Amino acid sequence: MSELSLHPAITEPALARRALIGLAFAVLAVFVLAPLGVVFAEALADGPGAALAALAKPDAWAAIRLTLTVAAIAVPINAAFGLAAAWFLTKFDFPGKALMITLIDLPFSISPVVAGLCLVLLFGANATLGGWLVASGHPVIFALPGIVLATLFVTFPFVAREITPVMVELGRSEEEAALTLGAGGWRTLFTVTLPNIRWALLYGVLLANARAMGEFGAVAVVSGKIRGQTATMPITIEMMYNEYLSVAAFSLAACLSALALLTLLAKTLLERQHARKAQA
Image 1 (cartoon, helix red, strand yellow):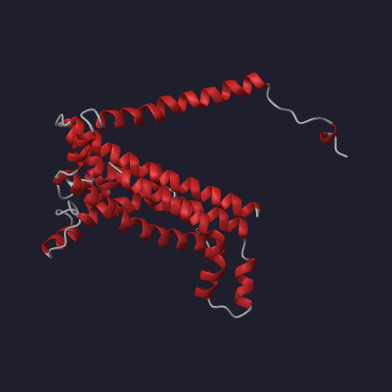
Image 2: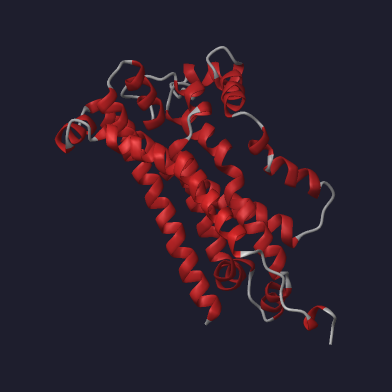
């Protein structure tokens, strides 16, 4: 019997535990719950009718529609690329593997504003490629494609970083067994790999979706902030607040916060379901 097993588990005193828990709740209350409460309180300052009327205005509705459209385009693309990147990193050994992992994490270290500026320099009207696209009637900057590209850049790491550790832990044995039994690559992917990583994939998709809807920096650079056309929800909130349209700004902010809370709720429900199935 080991020496550790002869002694009871060492635990923190009850007073210390309560103090740490209270401190954690206090920090959450100050930095998370209080701002959310202010947003919803300001949105409802003139009553629910005023808030709904503000959301029904063309500019606000255009911002909501654009934000959901960008997320609907960027998130599935990033899910596919993240899955492919994680598969490539965990199933194959090749020179430059560490460099590829670093490049996947690059959007975490680069300012979104810098990323947006790079897209402007590459696809702007004054650039060779961007000028050709503008001349052919397919502008990227100050249009939907530029917003999607900026969103793709800032959300790319989420899916790959959620899937990769899970695939590393699972190893290659199940896929190799399936291939040995005659299954093709696609059948192995859909019948072996995806069922094993489905929870990590869903977590990554939810995180990417939340970031896609809330992104401001990169989108602000490439969108041009054209009201009713290229202004997403975060940009429209800033524009309305700067114009002293407080109820409209906070109503749209409350709508964006509600979408984020729904994403968090979905993630929590998935985690609980995953935990129940893991225990079973």
